[in-house]
Image (cartoon, rainbow, N blue to C red):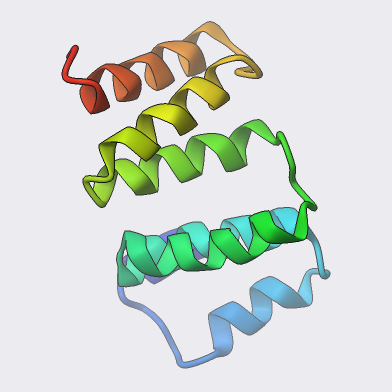
Length: 113
């Protein structure tokens, strides 16, 4: 819901982010915040937050971090990096639907789709 609030522009300065972080200093909460920021402020802003999260190592190998990184890189037309991230995200994918989604992104970034 937080991401939706950001994307719709119903953003009171600091309020939504503060409420999000108030749930606890969780790496997953920070990943969700990066997604919300990407939706509201663009993929570069979200990717910047994700890079700090990645550097912490808190979500190393986490499939949703890998998939989110791939999507943001694709949106930034950084196709080679996006393709590598899609490949990384495919292995730990939790379902066939998730694998199909990731495979479509990989195909798009490699000119196969």
